[in-house]
Picture (spheres, one colour):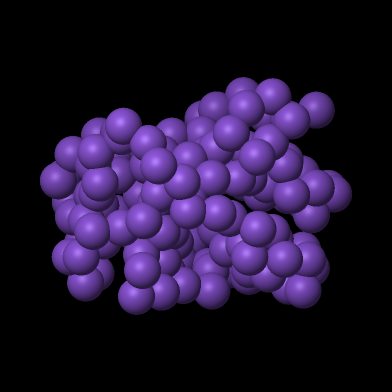
Length: 131
């Protein structure tokens, strides 16, 4: 599968028993539909977070879904310090996270109480671990 940002081939990695697609060039992450819910601790609360993503207008260029190749929708998740802009496939194929956005969503959602996702991402991608 090719990265929707830089068009490089992505690698598949396993994070908490969920296969994620990761771009080595831009450090983005693709999660297939339903995988974010699997990563977050409480599926019902995770679904509520995902349902809270609202379509938004932005000057960012629309990206194509790496699965169906249709333009994805920009959605906003409001965090405490800033708004996180994600790309969501309108066919439900998945979500695209630019570098660091999956960490931001896990922190924003407050569903990763033990910082499991943040620690796993830090181990996988050599980023600074959350305390």
